[in-house]
Image 1 (cartoon, rainbow, N blue to C red):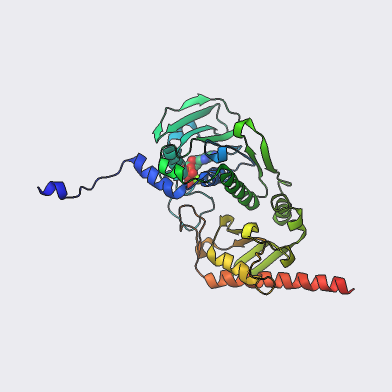
Image 2 (cartoon, protein in one colour):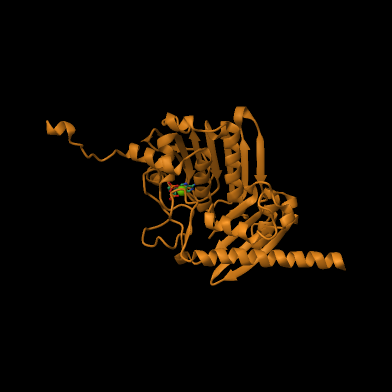
Length: 353
Ligand code: ADP
Ligand code: MG
């Protein structure tokens, strides 16, 4: 009987597709926090609060004062590949963090997701709940402004994934790293992270010092809040250019190096990235100043015409591909070496005088 051995090709249903996509987009609670905070930034929020319980496993709540979602659009926000951020005609000129329309449907497939939102100018707010990929009807709700996204019981629907989560402490740390990273990318936005486990009140706040003004000043203030006054005091401002690629940010003096690569933050066109090429270049720039077991501390922003870099490499979007990787590397190595040499020169002339 041929039909028994013959494989049958079927279209997977939407819930299964979302669950598979979630495997890529939402690896752990910190990746859910990243997606939700990025959505809040994309919505133009100036204040973003993240509340978590039990390492984000039982609760992640992101509250923003952004533009909100119209009640009629709520179901669309939760359907796959639906986005307000691009129209599909120009994948190269992406300014927003999001563009794939994957995060919310993925989160709705692996946790209990509730979105309450009030579109700016709307008379009232609306709420939509998704459990295991099934949408409840949209209902009226009470909310003054912006959006509250609440994700409970992450991975309850995918027990295999649940088993691979690390301790609450490790997850809290990873969530803290995500909030720090995004707060460096957005120094004009106020961020609060609150651990409400068991009704607790652990809290980290990064206040926006200035809502306008010079970006580098705001960034310096944020660097002091996020990485500490000592880093800020040892940080040299960067400003270099090579063939149309720009480098700004702060690099710490070699004397302020760390035993682990915990204080390295890299951004390409405002997007946090964890790119081997750039990390390698950062290390290379300090190679004359640091021993192998020390790691440089730096917050680097590379800005380049979007035509010359592809941010569309991975769903979690932390990789980028430069059209001219050699130029990016050269910019970091020479930009940092010059800044460090200048600072060293100034330091030694100060001592001499
Ligand atoms: P993407 O960010 O790639 O567009 P998401 O699944 O993360 O995809 O979100 C889908 C859509 O829902 C967004 O394009 C946006 O229109 C809307 N949305 C999500 N979060 C928010 C928010 N916090 N404020 C306003 N709109 C939001
Ligand atoms: Mg998104």
